[in-house]
Length: 254
Image (cartoon, rainbow, N blue to C red; front, side, top):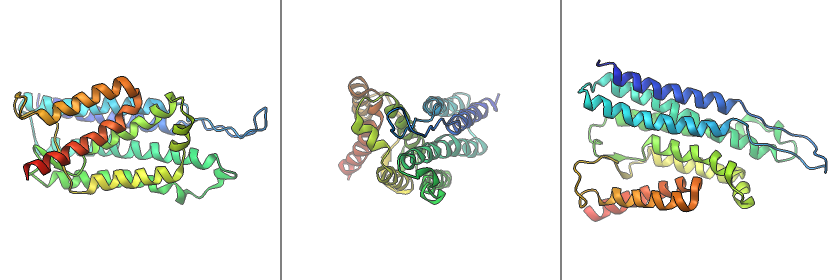
C-alpha cells in the first residue's frame, strides 16, 4: 500500500515520456507551394504533448494527495517526485521550445541548415528545472511557500504554447510565437524564474476560511475569467497573475 503514491509519481513520468515521444514526431514540411511560397507546417503531434503534460500535472497533484491520505510520505517519494517532474515539466517543455526554434529558423532561407547551437538555449529549461527541484529537496522551509516559481507551473505555461499556436486566428500571434528572439527571451525569463528566490505562494489550503485563502481565490477567479475570454491564451495570463499575486502577498506581509 505504501507504494501506491510512488506508482502515481511514476505515472507522472510516463505521461512526460509520452509528451517527449509526440514532440519528436514532427511534421515539418518545406518546399515550394503552388504559388511559389515557402511552406512550413507545425509539427503534427506536438499539440498532444500539451495534453500529456497537463495530465502529468494532475497526476503530480494526486500523488502528494494520495501520499498524505495514506500517510505514506517518504524521502524516496520526494526524490522520485522530483525526478519525474524534471522529465514532465523540464525536458518535455524544453523540447517544445526546441521544436518552436526549429520552426522559427525553418521560415528563413537556408534555415534548416542552421547550426544546432542556435537551438541549444532550449536546454536551459530542463537545466533550470533540475536545479530548482534539487534545491527544493534540501530546503525544508518551502512547505507552504516557494523560493522561485515551481517547475510544474513553468511546464504548464510552456505546454500552452502549441495550443495557442494551433488554435489562434491571429497572424500577429503566430509570428510572435515563431520569432526566435521572442522565444530566446521567454526561455531566459522562465529559466530565471525557476532558479530565483522570489517568494511564490504554494497553492495549498491550510484551512477553508476566505480571509486566509483570498489570494488563491483571486487567482482562481482570474483563471476562470481568462479561460472563458482568452481560451488557450489564458495560461500565460494566469501564470503572470500567479507571480504578481505572490509578490503582492509577500509585500503586504512585510
